[in-house]
Image (cartoon, rainbow, N blue to C red; front, side):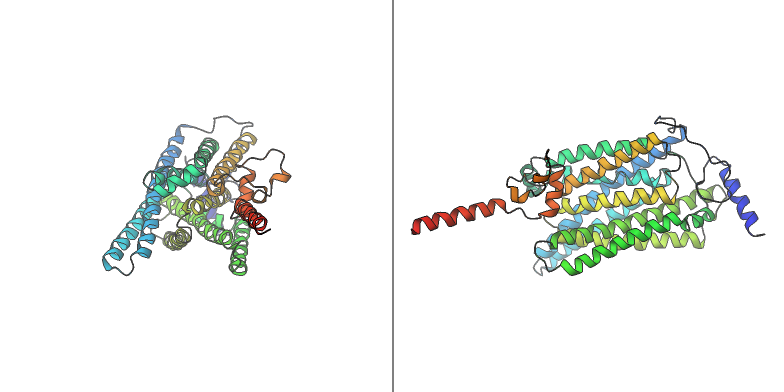
Length: 405
């Protein structure tokens, strides 16, 4: 107990400063603030400018991510088409390393974003990068533009839904300024709720790995199993990476206030783990872009949807960003997150309009069929619509049969 007393005093001292600690389960943090009922904008205070600075940095990072993904995608195609031409291979390698550099720059911008804003808010903006991808890429890729037209511009509807959802999440999210010390962060890692959530997400990853192993030789399920594994794995890594990145920023801020030492083992571990997770994430994303080289929006949309979901929940649980939510803010934030994920799924799965019942298995169970709701389930159940092809084959068979008679 003697060693626990100064530790408790240090946490109490930090909570008395303008920055607030996580008071949900952290010992030594007195007088947990009470939340007002309903939804108001009272949580947006003079310190909220930091949140909007973080949002701005996150949007700049999203733009760098998009250009990086595009360069990485083009480099993969150029390497495949190089046909052992040293000059073309050199150009492809140069473009690939440029993509990595842009990805690193985006990561640094995200680090600044996490220093100013809550993780649950920054991760709720994942859909913005997909919006940029869906709107920017067709401008210089004729094939992507033709595909956008064939879908009756479904991507635009998805983008509108994502913007509405992201705006709701930003306005209802946690706007408190924080500077957690290393001692507090160590306590957060031992939270039962955090450990339970990470265990569940790890088990889900294991399920997708097993599904991929057992169904990789099944032709009509191979693409969906690839999408689930290659989309979920980097999203899971990215959510943890964002948490560790924000932890490093929290240590930096608390060290500036004299509460922690930035040059410490904890900082070294958080930065090292962040870098390792970032490398693993880039490798998974690169493989996913190779696998879905002609359907990149499908892979990126699903990957970002899962990353947003996991990142928001991870930040909310680990940093206690949900503890001050009123019932009204819970509703607004939850509906916003639902809209953002729904928009990402529209971008991922809503393709060319389907016209045959065999390609729309949910239609017979849904009284108000919509391609933006039921069509998502149809795309998961029936990956490759072939109703029209079956109809053509059937008519051709009957015609040839009648002619023979």
